[in-house]
Length: 286
Image 1 (spheres, rainbow, N blue to C red):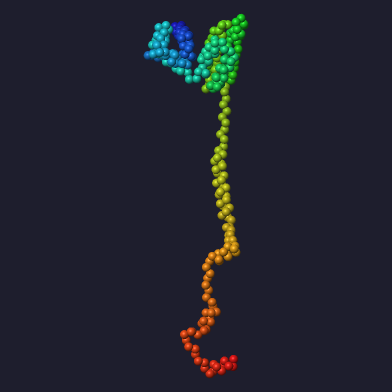
Image 2 (image 1 turned 90 degrees about the vertical axis):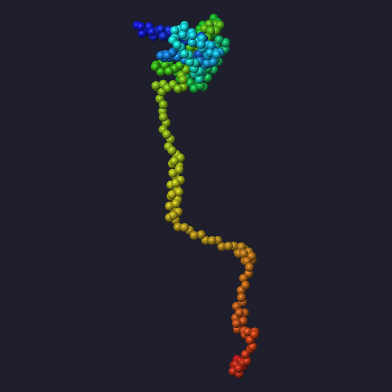
């Protein structure tokens, strides 16, 4: 029984701390808290949209929060760690607070909600559900609720615990309007989700590279088996030959008949021989 009371007391203290921080850090975009107890101190992690507002000028505001946690709520040696939310459009508490602030300013609720839906889905969320209820019709009208859905949303079963949820209230002239936001983060994978892995495509470049090699080898065998064909040189044209002869120098040829006659003829320097009577008689007979 003592252990049950201990856990109940811790739950009550945690809810009171969350309510206090939500009221104090509303302008800073408060999203949540995480308390980690160690042997030396109690680490309190605050997730906010605007950390400078939490720290304050020269750390005055964070020191005030540390004293309040220690004295009013009995947390031993609290150490506050402020963490910035990197993607505020995927945090349901921040989105719900933005919608509530816009409703308090008197803006059109449908325009506000659809703008929030587009921003959440563009951030990569798999699904989102925004529900608003209360005095929507104005003063004197009946209260009603409206629900806006987009994407995939898990509502039942153990998988619904993976869905993030945030709630807040908007105080308008006609009454109170409640705002509830559910977001499925992009990194969430549900157990019933099946992923089909596509087979790898065949390596076409390798096959295409082998084909030219085979073709070149076949061509080489074919050319080796064939006999080489001799080509006849084209005869030069007559015109070109005549032009070549015109440009070439004429060759000097020795006259053969003159040479023969010269051999038969007596030398110019020698004296003619006297004919004998027998030679003269033979010439006369001839």
